[in-house]
Amino acid sequence: MQRRVLTVLVLGQLLAGAGLAAGVTVGALLAEDLLGGPGLSGLPSALFTGGSALAAVAVGKLSQAWGRRPGLAAGFAFGALGAIGIVVATAIESLPLLFLSFVIYGSGTATNLQARYAGADLATPERRGRALSYVLLATTAGAVAGPNLVGPTGAVAESLGLLPLAGPFLLAAVAYGGAALVISLLLRPDPLLEARRRESAAVGSTTPSSSSITSSSGVTTAAVSGAAVSGAAVSGAAVSGAAVPDITSSHAGADAPARIWTGDVITGVAVMALTQFVMVGLMTMTPVHMRAHDHAVTVVGLVISLHVAAMFLPAPLSGYLVDKFGTRLVAVSAGLVLLTSGVLAAVSPPQSTVLVTTALILLGLGWSLGLVAGTTVLTTSVPTSVRATVQGQADVAVALSGAAGGLLSGLVFAWIEFRGLGFALAALSLIVVAAVRPRRAAGAAGAPRVTAV
Image 1 (spheres, one colour):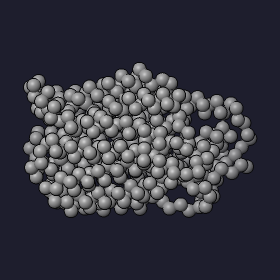
Image 2 (image 1 turned 180 degrees about the vertical axis):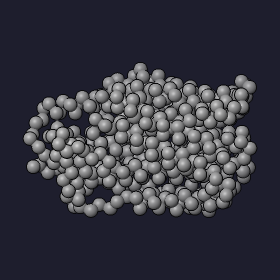
Image 3 (image 1 turned 60 degrees about the horizontal axis):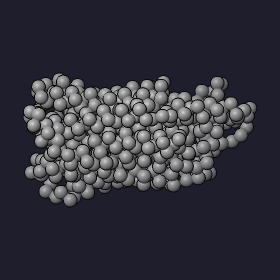
């Protein structure tokens, strides 16, 4: 069943990746052309990233109520609608429609990321990191191909009387629409509903009187049923490699409501949000920086495609590292890689395509490490009864952080240019490292201690 779910998700992500690449590659360039300068060229990135924040809430709530299939299918469908709106806006030169369409287009970005949660719903505890990473990996093909199709899709757009930069959004409309069809027709059984059914079955077959989950600091946080322990805490404790950091109870009985937003869950979200801010900020301004120094648009597309490949292609490695060494070590590694990326981007000569590309590849790798580490915490520590809702709320923080990164990057770029932007984002990357709390208790690395009463 898990193999079937992953196969369908992978197929959907292969298509959706091409839709994701359009806004990443030419959104800033399109805004620069229509607005007449680079100062607000980060606005499309901010708009579609902000739109993805709204979509993350909607997809999360819809998935919580009806399952992953309708949530993901609706999100991809709205992404296709937004891409069509961008094409129409460029044709009639309507800035209000363009900005609104970028917001709607963000639904595809949010759904593309939300799909990773579906890959982990039915995974065994010791393979959750790798399961969700396979879904991220599947995005690679479309996301890498998309930027390299700027030329061909631009030619198609010109033949239709449109601006060449509208071409990638024609591709995005087809890609997101195809992903919506694949998910709505083939994602059966629904992974979240099946996980919930299994948890309910465990309740019926396990009836110990009581137990408690104690965090690694030794403080008992909630009394839970035996079924809840088997559904979350025991599965986390079974992971000898520490896929789960020391987490307080994520389930509770009627007498002690669960504390869902534990310190570790908040830390996981903070790491994802900060890595998103740094990644979007540097990535958004790189095409503008390169074109300002006479790099061809095809070269810009190649650099961005390599960056996107570095975001998604190392996902299985990130998942393996999380399953093997735990989320804390991987999150700290993410911050250090992002730091290196920002410094390299700052010191690279503008004419050096190799060094700028290397900085963007490191940027993608750091993002991958941070996203997989934070996602594993959310999937492992939050019960199915509220999992999709909490994951949607977490992705709101990630999306808003990306929106801020995209918007502020244009202003910083106009003020202190690309070198200053690189150093600023490198300094911010240190906060990712500082945000990760040190482990304070002995015991199985990364596993919450489960103590019978």
